[in-house]
Image (cartoon, rainbow, N blue to C red; front, side):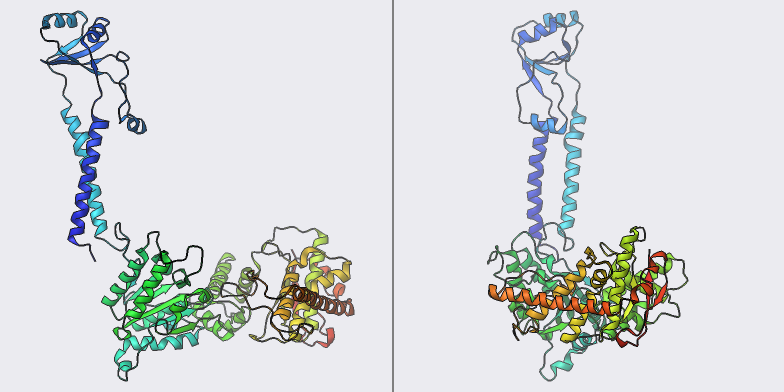
Length: 639
């Protein structure tokens, strides 16, 4: 929508006034030649000293140009500083002398001829030069700037003097080619959004019985799970205009700009209804009010949020306008934004399970040339906890690895290497470890593997490697879960801790000392033990009491430390918690040590030492450890 005519006229008049002032300053300060007023006596002295170059004689004055260095410095003028900044300061050589009435002009002419000074009845005119550089070129530049600004004023939403225009992107029906066929692994979320699509296609179907479609749906979930893709799929299925904007694009430095953009967005969406408005990263706009050092009615974010709340209440759901929003921080949103009547539905878009991962992989694998041995089921089993974005990246990494080795198709080995690259980091084949360190790492990783084989209910070992990866990993043991797990018993948690401490136990048994290689294992074990005591009520001393709430959000994954928070229990209880955590960790370490001592003969006879001298290979591990009959093969890769 273009500005009103009065606004354009006001801007043009103001601009013209500024141009007149600038040109006047330009003429008086920069382009006007500097002239020094001399008395007649001083002029005659300079003439007799041969310091005059040329003069022009008129009835009232004598104007001329002196030789360099002849004239005294002129008095200070307002434009001197500006001339210095622009580099246009030059020596003043022009002077003027007021004629004395009654003085014989013949004497002056004779003096000029005697000293060989060029004189005339007038000086050389600079009219055309002054006209070109003083008026034509500056006016042309000013007119060009005016035309550019006027075009911007009447242009799109990001133009000058249109701060209140919304910065959204509009996708037309023909541009939206994303459908629900492109979205996989989130069947529950798709089912929730089917009604929105059906309403946009057939609104009278729901209005027939007096029902109304939810005004808005809020997509919540971890990053990379496909919230934005779902919103585009809804618009693509419904074949309606799609208004997309980020929550941060509403907020500006000037108070009131965000509220104006909200009004403009809804106004334009109403004009093209039925339509979908999608606000990504809603937490940037909808943070709870009254929180923070600058909270108050004058806050720009609060005014923008207030306007959004009014707009959500002000439109009729029968108009065919549906609001979709996405966030991964629902815990900080304002309660007024989440109440019924605004965002009526909250759709959880969580990490996919194994079945969902298979579906997502099948979607992305269509674009890649695959070898016959590639199985989406096996790849999905290697990727627990991966989001849709992670799986898309995995398929791309596998294709790049296959291209790097010159293969004709992407094989299962490429997918395995891609998983290791994403989980453990980049392989560092050039990092040289001395023989002693390589031996410690080999025994450490074998300790993890053998304890995992000896304990029941533990995820089977998929691969053991002593090739350094990532920032600080000198080796790693990958366990492949057979299924997705959502509950764990105390015994399973204790077994998980014992496996994590198996490498440290192997170092203690074989070498009689401990190293820094178990730092990450200790951190993970301590987190599990503290959760058992403070969150799961698995401590006999503290009983069935939860002393700590789960502080994790969608932005803090299971492998990230929880954010700091204040304790809400006594110091004595905190000391008991520390004692219980230490007792649980110590018990797990003793279990690992006992398992290793009972089967110590397995270590030197099954490749933990010999593998140091080989590049790679597979070493069978005894299946008789604690009666285990699984008999897997563990790949030991040594640099």
